[in-house]
Image (cartoon, rainbow over all chains, first blue to last red; front, side, top):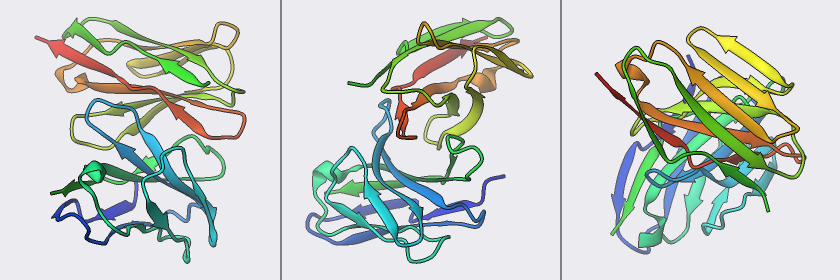
Length: 113
Length: 109
């Protein structure tokens, strides 16, 4: 059973609002990821981190930022939400031994009006 | 560019066998992964291949041919709960996962 948690599960907000999606894992994994996924579409990597104080941008520029101050915590912040940000956001982590075996959180479904 | 191709949708009958194909073109190769994703849920890891050949895990098997850039996921004795999307992903030379769009598998009674 994976121990990775995301909050909120669902969020409806207005354009221009600042939001933070929380992600925490209790597995001690160094690698953590944020993906964006629209229904029936592939996963797009937004940001990733290979450890504390290490963050990198992925292929998808979504005008978001992340931080990794603690191993277990990897929040994603949208400074000014737009309707184009409406999507499912998935947080994941992986251990060193099997870097491609990702454990996903349940996701945060964001709707921007 | 990097590319993962899988069929968009497949239909099969309960109790039957289905093979989901995946072809890839990536810069480097450090393993191929299959994930299952039920509608509205997060993906869950199914299998990992890094060497050519077949890996069997219960009702599910995954095959890899690196020379052909090809893999398949074989599901036997299909059950209704197997209705889901199946995602193929390849780890490239930078150890980044490149994801396919997924194959939606519909199981009919």
